[in-house]
Image 1 (cartoon, rainbow, N blue to C red):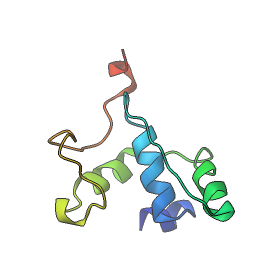
Image 2: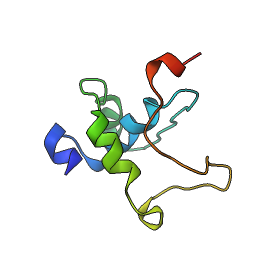
Image 3: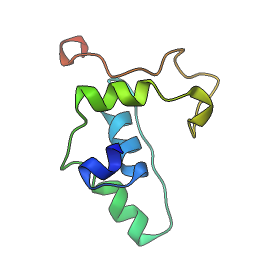
Image 4: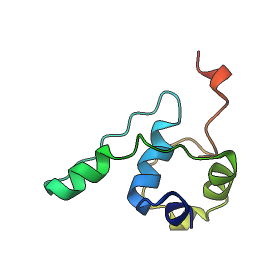
Length: 84
């Protein structure tokens, strides 16, 4: 639903969500020129607080990536004031 609202793919929304978190580095990779262009095409929209809350409510078993070292709660990114 979020991807549809923004006219983006799920992967693009996921990348955008990652880069909006402070101290998180997203390292997308692809050998496909189309996917590389799509990975770059994430800077013309921002996720709303409602989008972030919707993502935070996703069941953890539906997440594609959840490494052992990940934070316990992958909630919405903190406010910009917390970006020290």
